[in-house]
Amino acid sequence: MTIGLLSFLLISLLTVAVSGAQAQDVKSRPSRDTLISSIDLSQSLSTKSDWRFMASQGPNVTDPVTMDSIPGKIRLCVTRDKGASCSSDLDNVLRLSSGADDYSDPHYLTDVRIVHPRPDRPLLLMQVASQHSGNSNQRLATVALAYDREQDGFTLVYKKQTGRNNSQEIRYIADGPLAGAIISADPTSDAPFGFWIIVERLGSTGGYKQILRYRSATRYGDGNPLAVIDSEMPEILQKLSFWHPGMKLPLPAGECAKPRLVGQELWC
Image (tube, rainbow, N blue to C red; front, side, top):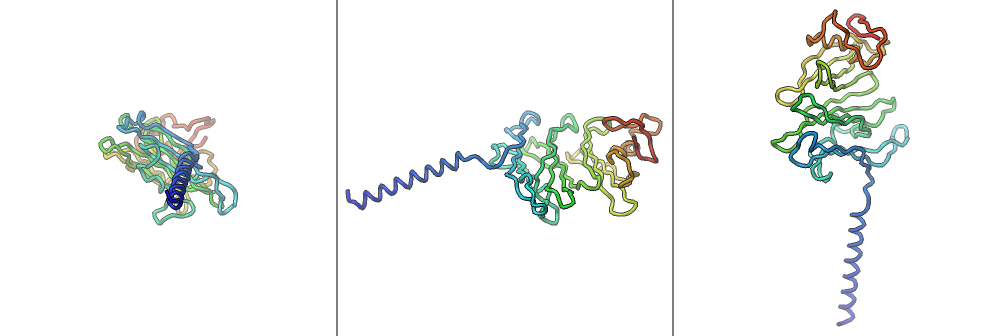
């Protein structure tokens, strides 16, 4: 064997060894993301494949406004291959229709659970929030996914964005006459400043459909300590024929020392 051939073989063996070590290092190196939520969907939604919801969060980042350290970006994933691919485009739930901005990425997972708007229609419900703005506001998104057994996949049946600083809210109703409904309270843009109350329920086609929309009796900054949806609940139920004056007032969770109607608005 010539010296040249021997050198070539030694270099080749060394290259393979180094490459193998690098590949092993990449494979064994832990991800910098932290798994913050994992829900087995195969049991709760009776899926054909081994579907799972996974949320992982990256390392802390620097807030561009305050320069403080804040929680990293969250990756939301509905997967049947342990996160290698995700079925639904949950990366864009906070993105505006006009395009991406500083508040398009989720940094907080504020709620995730299985809900049952109908006995035969379980949903994966979640709410995420962006980083805070300079005035402490956030963009929030509430979404609900339904399992399509025929396609063995998931479809988006509800999605709505809102903010935080003006008493707005999106709420899933778990029990009572409106069980399964989603109610939102969005600030109006003109005086007298109140809220648009929107009630949506699961329709026959599988998605949420609006069944009520009206301008609230509750005014922004009127001093009522109740959440807007709670203060408007008698009016919501009356408009949907579930309540009328003379019946027991629908009260919020917790204490309500002196429940009374002021105009059409519930006070405690």
